Image 1: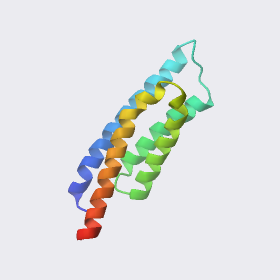
Image 2: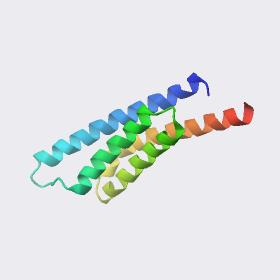
Image 3: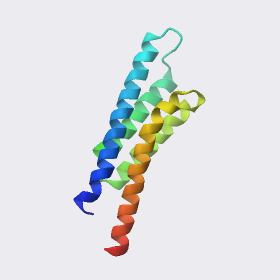
Image 4: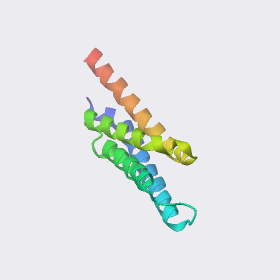
Length: 115
């Protein structure tokens, strides 16, 4: 695959990783500061899982298996947040990662089909 085919997926993944780190960091501080919220295993798993998933997808954007593993880790970490409004904070990152994945799949399919 050409180097140019990695440019937009890399940019989208970078935006997703930056947004995810920002959201997870803000939520972590929020959980510590607020008296009405508690820091538990599920909160930590979601915060760490989303950040690690987006980070894996970013750092290994040229390796399809690790990129997909990072995407799936991110998606799995967002699932526990669906019981509250928190999942809405992660939707832009999920959208960027999904778009990057679609571009990678289409780009690979184009190269496989047309050489």
